[in-house]
Image (cartoon, rainbow, N blue to C red; front, side):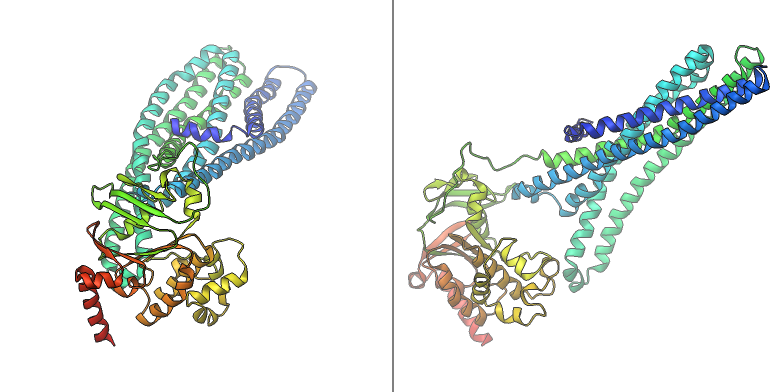
Length: 580
């Protein structure tokens, strides 16, 4: 409940909307209470024994009052719904914006344990549940509350004893509503959690549809989705089963209250204690009370769903930030000297990826980290960009611990070319410039240096060709060249190439290496590689195994050492000879 109350605080600057919504609710409720009283006047005019002319006059005036009340209620209901629903939409708008901003700023460690589909479910389904709970549901709860209080007051004024008789069933209704609310809440929490799992399963298989089809995993994918979908269906059935018991019970109790009102008021009419008009007013009041009573179960469902949604939303917003922020962060231009000082790192699952790693990279030099898969190369690059913090030791840039740098300033001066480069569903130009205002001449130089101009010129709209999600429609090598052009355009003082030539053939790689040599000048470059052909042009090569340095030096020194590097060189040279 406290999380839903936090969502309400998002409208603290929307007092105008809330006041207008409140006026609409009050006007709607007053109109609903006055209508039976006007109808009472009509019936009493017929049975009071007064002259016909006076009775007709009373009826005409009452009819005008009813028309006026109908028009007035129309206006008030419009104001009520427009501004209260607007408040709910305002909350969902701000909550979704706040949530997405938080997601963008959460550390990598958060995404190591959360599934994309589940996050998508929170951003859509759960936020929508909060919107309903803070808009439509609250509106009905407040209106119903005002109606119940107003009608009760009017009934007590007309006949206290008859009012108490009609309200005899209401304690039972209250007990049932509380019981239902407590039972339905956990069911909705589980339903929304399972909905997130289903989103994840669908998202993973759709995103990886090529792998699914290539390995004929359609039956397994269908089975997993069907299993998750069945569980969601069964959870929905549990809610439906509980609702199907409670809703008819509430309807029965509401109808029973109406029957009691009719019988009791009829009895008092016969005894002469109340007029026929008062009886009609009482039965009308009782009927107006039945609708809020019938809504108790439905509103409880929606409210519990909103509470469950708010809890999932604020679990993300309140997620602990694993990266500490300094009180006075450093924000300056990077020169490029990097030092790893006894750095060790273990992932949250306990797997140690880097052990006692020490290395100094002078500004303007090119260093290659070489090793097999799982040797810790990419982890070191991730630590340098501060996607994670070391568990031991520290990393400095220009002599300043990277934990003391302003994070945005740090990353804006580090260019990345990942092995699996993500392209957005946008034009090639937008993917290269990343939304920045870049000179056309620089873009052309970048695509030429990245060996991308030839294939771009063949596209129907050149740089303005829209690529699909994740770069669908481009080959792996083409996506890699776009990513390299993106890094060139950024022009940062530090460049990280994470196995960026893995998707390129040997000939293209050699041509690209020559073009990139100019880009390297004046920049500190860290190359992550498995191929010796990628590493041999570096100023310094560090060979890694299981997160530790096993040897280092330049290409010729390492060949002379006749160690791991020399062995890799011989094996890969033989493979190239076989392919030639």
